[in-house]
Length: 281
Ligand code: NAP
Image 1 (cartoon, rainbow, N blue to C red):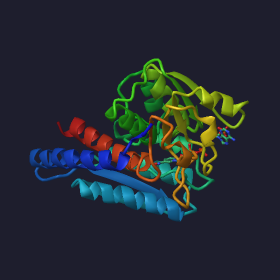
Image 2 (tube, rainbow, N blue to C red):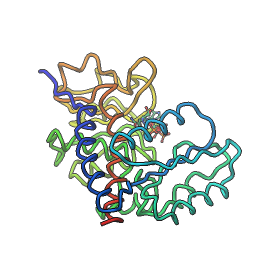
Image 3 (cartoon, helix red, strand yellow):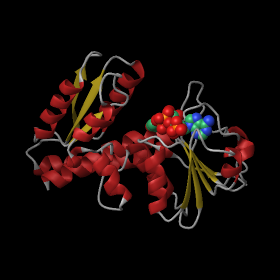
């Protein structure tokens, strides 16, 4: 069996071409003003700084603008909340990205939840999560929403399939499980206390690896013909799943790199353009 490669890089590039046109149309309607994403980086973590830069570059590629907010390592919850309120009240800002993780002294959940729902284009608020879970209009958390976009784009059947999600983080595993449930999959969510993980993974028609450990999920645990989605990315270009032995055994898989990663940023930008269209008409 030759597996279908779920190519997030190409899909993201195609979407960017469409987004460039939508942004150009918005500018024509709004006296040359482009949609704006505000990025907030707190502290000096180099990986976070790189992610924020990549998001700003993606804005530029489609003709959007960004407001780059950088705050020091010692920032307090109150200072960050004040900055978020300022952006909520700024009519020129259409989306807000607060880069995760923030320094430990900050109440990250309170700060995420301070983002106005209509500007929550990274899908991090409890309100947005609840609405998504209830199948109401909301911006999905960018990584799982990006994964849903890849699966839909390749017409991967989800209805009635057994999806196994390994990981239950608020930004990835948990919303992923609910999105798959809303797509009529039967979902098992696994985490660090799950017993007999290999046995559960063996049942997966669709497997999502979101554990944060390099090649933690072994190829031998995965059944032939499964659809395999790997959200991880680690030094050396490996993900959370041992993909090498699977490429001729599964029906489809996301490569690492070039699968889930490009779709995360692309989904953030797409949702920011959606938000700007809603606001600007
Ligand atoms: P996280 O917050 O560290 O969550 C990891 C999850 O894995 C937790 O729910 C944890 O369970 C579970 N886990 C840990 N050890 C386990 C074990 N032995 N067996 C089963 N489950 C276990 O990580 P995250 O932010 O969700 O990220 C997950 C992966 O996705 C990472 O590789 C990260 O780099 C990647 N990621 C990629 C993107 C992208 O844009 N491509 C974006 C975000 C994340 P507990 O809840 O019980 O602790």
